[in-house]
Image (tube, rainbow, N blue to C red; front, side, top):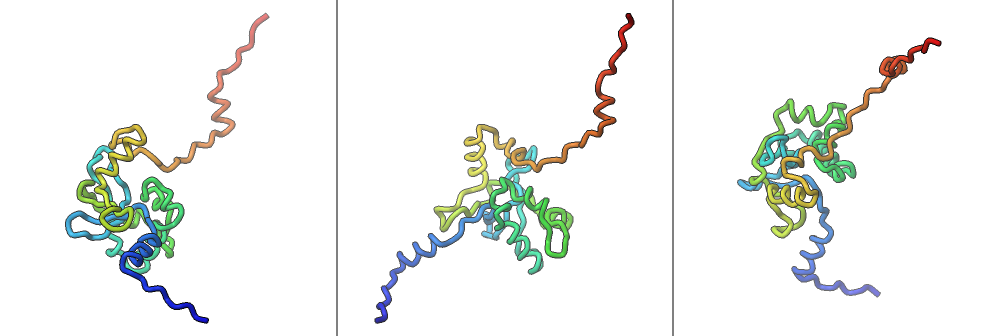
Amino acid sequence: MVQPMMPMDSVGTTETINSNRKKIKHVGKLKDGGAAVAIIFRTVPGEPKNCLVIGPKFLDENYQVTFMKALESAEGQSAFELGHHLMKSRFTDGIEILPFLHQGNFIKKRPTEKVIVTMGVGAAGEVPLDELNEIIAKEKGISVDELSLLDQPKTAKKTETKKESDAAKPKATKSKK
């Protein structure tokens, strides 16, 4: 016997859609005009009231798809700053993503107060980036200016050769008897 379909009301449908919708970090929109942006860096070193964003729609289709995959990847979502993940990511043709975006003038500096982070669904999931930065800084016990120093990519340590380590050691002197 076929079960009759339960009627869905608009509240149930909206709740279902909203609960199934992915919450993705590093995405937002411009306060003026609502253009979708990806937030590459939430602050700029020495400029805590500015951020760096990109409008993915300005990339060609293949690059846009690859960029969005990098943004939505586990590594992209776990990164404190999307830009740090993009430093290690490449488009399908092997071109490094972050340098390409920079050299192609795709990355734009915007005031953090003019960027709305869309963390959830509807207006309830939106917060101005400047307010979010203040909340994050307070939770971490640092200033907003120090946010740009968090989650820095690890730089390779210089591997010390035996000669260099031997040269750094003080020379033993022979004692005279």
